[in-house]
Amino acid sequence: MFLGTHSPRLDDKGRLFLPAKYREELSGGLVITKGQERCLYVFPEAEFQRITEALRTAPVTAKAVRDYSRVFFASASDEVPDKQGRITIPPALRAYAGLSRDCAVIGANTRLEIWDATAWETYLSEQEPQFSDLSEEVLPGIL
Image 1 (cartoon, one colour):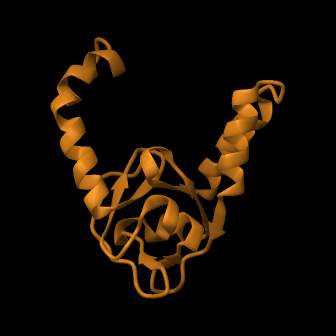
Image 2 (image 1 turned 120 degrees about the vertical axis):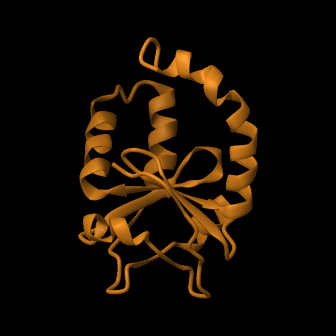
Image 3 (image 1 turned 90 degrees about the vertical axis):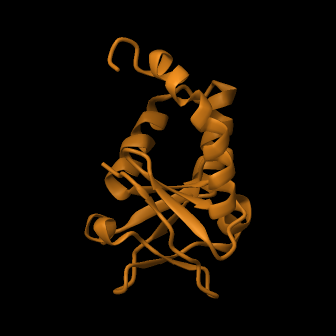
């Protein structure tokens, strides 16, 4: 499970330090791809395989499945962190997420998300007022 908010910086080569607490878990490899709201999703290989299997069983006759799968897999990049725990984010993914130097890496349960730091702050300030209202819709009867 991935938790918390971290504030790494991209270097001039497009490399990003993974949060230290997740380096061992991701040391064998990971997949970066486009996420929603212009962030990047970072999946451990096993989680990416689980998603791949779910999409494999989805009906290819459904246009939404084809459209989603095309973007999701075409933009995916498999990476192995270097000895310092850095990953290289491909230029197309950096452009999609609007990443410059300051980033926010957030834990989102089964994945990490990489955001431009300013975009994350904007998103968070827009979503926090609704947070308590959404709990009943997202987790009915639990919280």
